[in-house]
Amino acid sequence: MNKPSSPPLNPQTDESSKMGEYGEVAREKLSAAAQSAAEQATAAARQCSTHFVAEPAQDLYTRLRDYAKQKPDVAAAWCFGLGVLIGFKLRR
Image 1 (tube, one colour):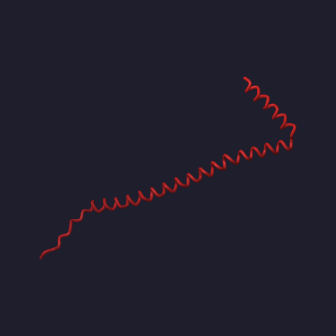
Image 2 (cartoon, rainbow, N blue to C red):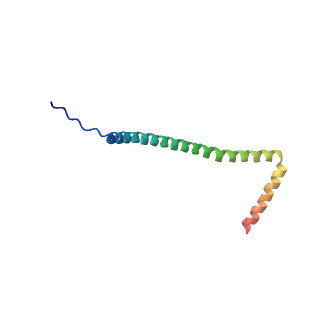
Image 3 (tube, one colour):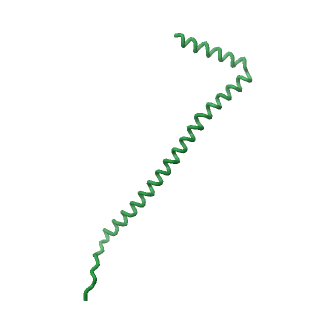
C-alpha cells in the first residue's frame, strides 16, 4: 500500500503566510486612508486660505468705507494725521 505523500503541515509556516497576507492588505488600506486624509487636508487648507485671508481684508475695507461715509470729518482727520506721521518717518 502506497500512500501519496503530502508535504508535512507546519503550523508556523501557515500562520506566517496568513499574517503576511493580512499585513499586505492592512498596508494597502492604511496607504489608501493616508492618501485620502492628505487630499482632504489639502482641500481644507486651500479653502481656509481663501476664506481667512480674503474675507477679513474685504470686511475691513467695507467697514472703513462705511465709517468714512458716516463720519467724513473724523475720517479726514485720521487720514491727515496718518499722512503727517508717515511723512515724518519717511523724511528721517
